Length: 352
Image 1 (cartoon, rainbow, N blue to C red):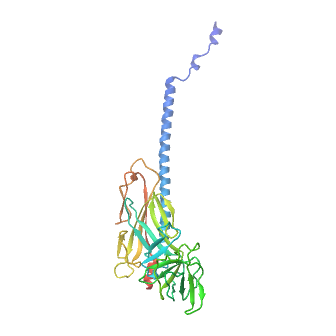
Image 2 (image 1 turned 90 degrees about the horizontal axis):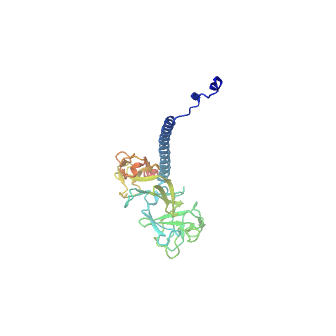
Image 3 (image 1 turned 60 degrees about the vertical axis):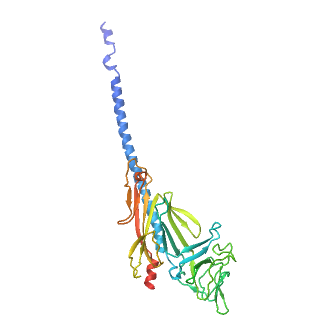
């Protein structure tokens, strides 16, 4: 009897986990998972905010780089031409828009229109180092002629664009179909051929030239590659149209605002900015605009649950405001503003 009692298993060590203990363990585990999930969501939200803010900063800096570079070049090689309007032709453009005019203002601001709250910035300059050295026409040239006869044509090459100026007539844009050719005769000089054809989209066909007739004394400016860039905001991106080439490209995404002012010397012609005017102002002369002040509004790509931006952004102290819709207030913004002197206008006024 004693032996059988000793062989019985002890109930003390055969008990398992109770239901209550299991439920307590599950609750503790769920709390731990909930805490970790909240930490992850908070961390991921901060990461997205930081990443989208960096993207907005990169887009704003890239946009400012392109605008600064082009605005500083504005007016190069064109200040001496005394043009008010430049008539031009481009065979590569759609029918009906091949003939167009270009204002000679180094920078032109187009004010907002319709539902678009943004300005457009149009920049004009020559890409040739020879643009400031004009050649003088020595023979009267009817507008049906494909030759300019000039006294000196050294450096003018095939493919170069030239601007012909003889105030008060409108100026004209043409493209050289061959290098300047030295010729004898009376008077001797150089022939500048600007024949239409596949080589030269910027020369109108014979017999259809609406440009003025230029006479002895008119000046020809070799502008090399004539540059006209138009910057504007479309579909939350900064776009740039090369007006002469007829192409458009995206400069940077995440850009929702572009506003600009003219810095004008309209008193005394002394090279000092007297007033800042918005894009609705039309400068009276290319020599009047001394600087451009602009602001770029870059938007982050991360939609925040709460409102994180005010209803209006001040673009610079004392400057215009940029309104945000209720939806836009759920994004973060970075403003880049700069004042860019038009150095070619400044130099021209200092020399003249």
